[in-house]
Image 1 (cartoon, rainbow, N blue to C red):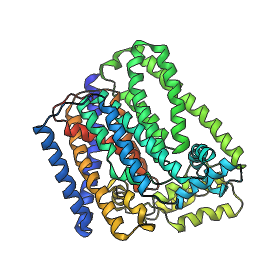
Image 2 (image 1 turned 135 degrees about the vertical axis):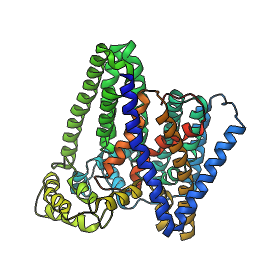
Image 3 (image 1 turned 90 degrees about the horizontal axis):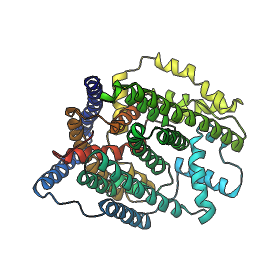
Image 4 (image 1 turned 180 degrees about the vertical axis):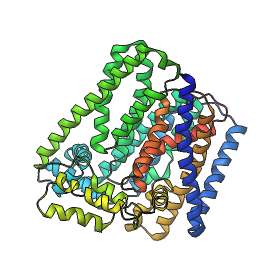
Length: 471
């Protein structure tokens, strides 16, 4: 059974390596016309190679309380940024904030039809409304919350790295996250990414705990699994991607447990744990949906058919377009509910699929949009800062991202060669799953935010050389 699990592990990692290698090739191709990408890639490779050489020549010991030190650095660096660089909410970010302020003030929800179309807006707004009740309509309070959330994420990256790699690699991963430029720049926004990214990292850590406890303390493990079902729903009400984690967990249980798959007792325990987790997830999800409908006073959408329709728009490369949104809102103007309007997009999806899409071109464009750059942090300031400031910020973000990307590739190659099996394989499973999901639905570079901590952990493995690893 272990041989079979190693085979499936390498199939999964081989697919992920192929996706990342293709992304790198797309970056190079884009760089031939937009030289900034090629320059950023070269500089990213240079700093990654320099750091690798430095770590080989100067192997410094891990300081006491390394995780706390990294978290404090993360807090300090990010707090300074949001104190100096501020920005008022716009676009979708303003939608989150307006709904949060309405909830806090007990007033009518603005654009309730739009929230019914995307119920996760109300999930994020509900969390933000707690801040609005305490601090008033202060965007600055939200940015400080973002700093705290990314700081806790830094601590979780340290814990994950320590369990999966080594203390030295964990410290490096936490430091890389602490100084990640795009994350720092985006902290000035009112958005959901810091919230659900923290919750996803917590899910990974609890899954590692579940794997350990289920063999020794089955009953507490089942209770933990049920609690993880609530955590999945917490993720889903902020960003509806928890199903990818559920599928990743199922794939790991069925294919990647190695020698443990010979034990009928462990099969039964894992089945019970998975059942408890998914049952709580499903029941709590139903309760939340009813709550959202009560708040909005209308039926909410169940499946985002519109986003699938946008995802197959070859002209925009799977990105948002006003024409697609006008088609959707046209059904709403006919008196349809959000759910009915979403279902009305199904014939249009079929029509678009039958129109002769050049899928290699479309998927390549979407892959580059999703993983090919990390410049949104700088681009966000295009309305409030000078063009020079924006370009410098975008360049810094991309240089750092490409260095981490290349080191992450090296780490994945080490994982591919290793025969180690463990619950940490949930990380590459989720990375691959979210990437493939966005090849089907609407895509934007912002949506890869939750993958950056995972890529950083891969990079820490790449930088770590011959250190032990459970990946």
